[in-house]
Amino acid sequence: MLGITILNMFSLGWQYYLLMDVQANPGNIDMETLQASDTLRTVITAVNFIMLVLSMIFFILWFRRAYYNLHSLPWHNARHSEGWAAGSWFIPILSLFWPYQIMEDIWRGTQNAIKERFGEPQSAAIIGWWWAIYLVNNFFGYITAFATGGAADVDELLTATKVEFVGDLISIAAIILAIRVIQRTSNFEKELLEFSQTPSDSIFSDNYTPPIENTEPRFEN
Image 1 (tube, rainbow, N blue to C red):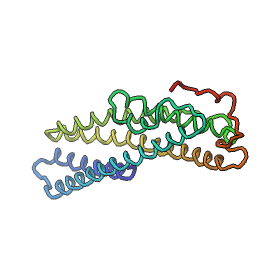
Image 2 (tube, rainbow, N blue to C red):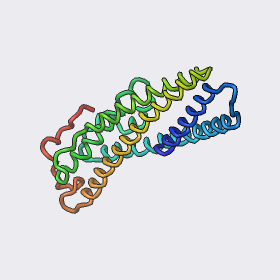
Image 3 (tube, one colour):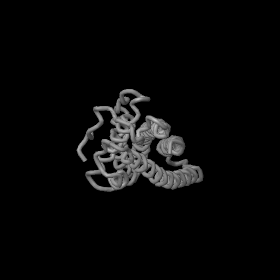
Image 4 (tube, rainbow, N blue to C red):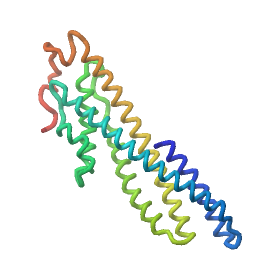
C-alpha cells in the first residue's frame, strides 16, 4: 500500500503537469501523452483497489487473532468478545470507536501479561494517533471522491488532482502508523509466546499468580 500510494503521487504529479500545459496551450494538446497518463492512472487505481482489499483482509485476520490470543489468557482485560475484532469494522457507528477499544485492549492486555519482562506497559499514545489518522484518512477519501467525480473542466481537474495528492500524504501517514502498531504489538506477542513456554513461571502455569492489579479485569465485559 505504501509503494502504490507513492507511485500514485508520481502519476498525480505528471497529470498535474499535463493539465497545466493544456491550460497554458489549449491549441497544442498532445492527446497521445494525455491518453498515456489516463491509462497509467486507471491501472494504478485498479491495483490500489486490489491492494486495499487484500490489506484489509490480512489486517483484520491479524487483528482478530491478536484479540483471540488476549482472550486465551487465564485473565484478560478485553472489553468485547473476540468475534467483534472482525465484526466491529463493518457496523455503522460502532466502527468509529470499537476497533480502537479493541486495539487498546490488545496493546495494554498483552503487555500486562508479561510485566515480568516488560515492566509497566508502554504508552498507548501511538494507538490514539493511529486511529485518529485512520479516521481523518477515511473522511478525506470522501472529499477526494467528491472532488474527482465532479471535475468537469481543466480547472476542476487541477483542483481534484491537488486534493487527491493531499489525500495520499494523509494515507502515507496512516499506513506508516499502522505498520508501527502492528510491528510493536507483534513484538509483545512474541514475548508473550516465549513467556508462555517457560516451565515454571509461565502465565499458563498452574502455579502462576498474576500481578495484584490484574486479578480483576480492568474493563467491564
